[in-house]
Length: 248
Ligand code: ATP
Ligand code: MG
Image 1 (cartoon, rainbow, N blue to C red):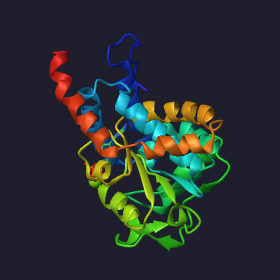
Image 2: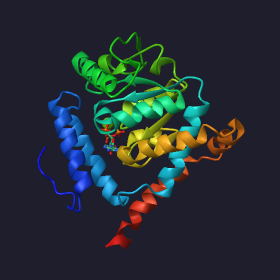
Image 3: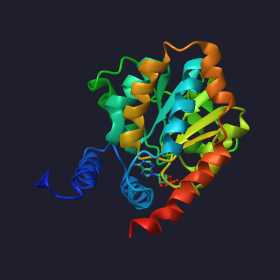
Image 4: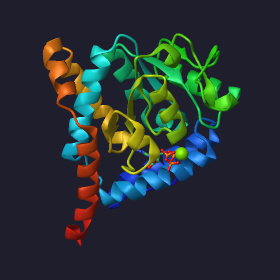
């Protein structure tokens, strides 16, 4: 990796980029993933590169939903594995969610590499390499999934997801949670819970919340979910972007 001094004002953003580039070389993230990350970074600037209230509320509702689900599944793509692999495994453990590798630019080889990478980080069980079901309405490779995983999940966390697949999962009747810095993306608008936050902040926050909230009574968790309003959350994120002018 190149030498980036920790004193550089954009240190975190720069080392995150370096990490993603390295993960492309290792065959874990895709080249297109670099472009998707750049789009995310632009929105992160606009929301002040911090976990705002609207994100914190969504993270809380998301954790409550995973904890109360019958069959929660966390979908992991190249960027998610590259940026938050270790923390996603921990979130799976704390919420009792299965992990499934699911790629937009799917190749069998990259699914294998990501699976091996997650196992090297301590994951016990990863779905993905041997898909045996299809998400209706999507073209061939993007539709592939596991019957015991995403296909039969009642709640799915799909960070950094594509709009088409998020909509297809919604149509299957699932509760869809996403992490997406762009509050206007089709994914952000299709999801039941949209966390407008950088995945590198959102997942560690959700791990802490899960540790705390798994001791909370089910009725309390249900109240958090019932009082959650995603349209309000998306509006709040856009209002925050509007307030960027005040930071000049
Ligand atoms: P959609 O298909 O939902 O309309 P899109 O085509 O604009 O969105 P995709 O490339 O399909 O974008 O999905 C990537 C999404 O992930 C983008 O909306 C981007 O803002 C978001 N994103 C990228 N990097 C991060 C990150 N580190 N944290 C959170 N969100 C991110
Ligand atoms: Mg897309």
